Length: 180
Image 1 (cartoon, rainbow, N blue to C red):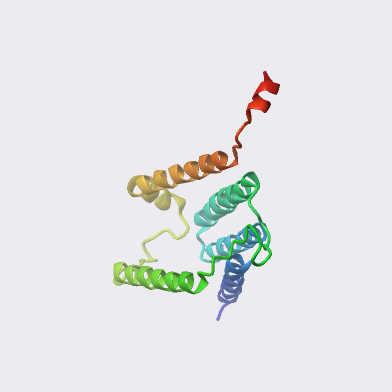
Image 2 (cartoon, rainbow, N blue to C red):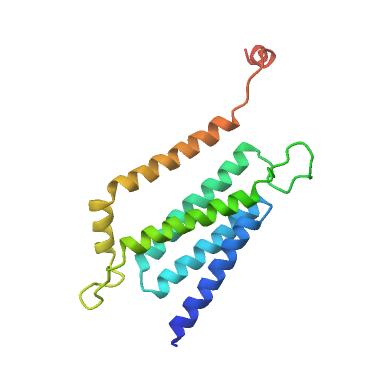
């Protein structure tokens, strides 16, 4: 076992532990910060695999944009970010945790089956492929994956507009009269 294998395994453990803390944290802000740790460890895994371009895309897009968007949405909506009192008004626990766990396991099984069946015979010829070369990845993204890339950007824009719409408050007649 080489040093790169040890670093990769340690980063994988950090990524897995942070991912568990993301979904078990009762505070939304803390969950977003654990997501930063998870994405950072994943970027480190990409660096160990000599995929520098993918690592920097991970840092710039996921840490720099997605997590910031999540924090921005949480702060704009003024949603409760911490644990709520049990049985009190505004409680967020609907009691559907077993059903959610079952749905998560079913989704994992379906996606795992699809990925395994889709890539069963696929391999990478490392002797004829430039490992870590951004040109190959860039050509693939902008030649074959332009539509999913654009759909993701529209989805992020819709999430941002949705956060703004949710934070708008109704202006009463008295406030409109005061402004005039």
